[in-house]
Length: 153
Image (cartoon, rainbow, N blue to C red; front, side):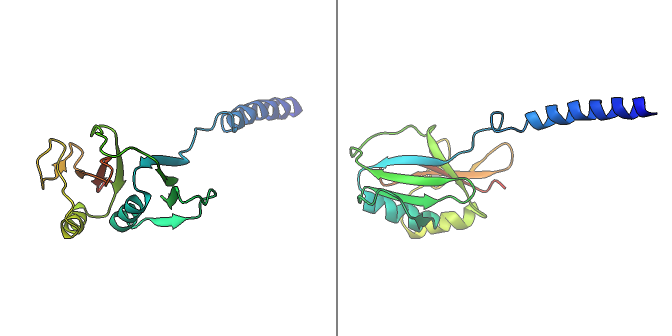
């Protein structure tokens, strides 16, 4: 009986050590910390992201009037950094996407702010209905970076 208990204890110990090794920091997946967006006019970009997405400004360590940091909740942070050249062209495939409870309500907000939006194909004032049933729209920030908004849960 003691041999069975000892063998069981040893096997359990080996199994437990392997299971724990898979959760060590060396094996943990990386977590998103922040997204940095290079902007030409920090004040304009800050006002845009704060008012369109209701983002909350958080303290930033530089205090050089070239950075605005926003909290994205558990997803991390959005850092706006002044210094970009104006009139750059960005590809729609490279976009930031935010989820909202209702794309239809968000579209009303964009319309109230006179912000143009389109579907993936580029049809103005249209909403993409993805194959998974998620509604999604696209528009640009003041610097021309593409943004997406959807109702994915």
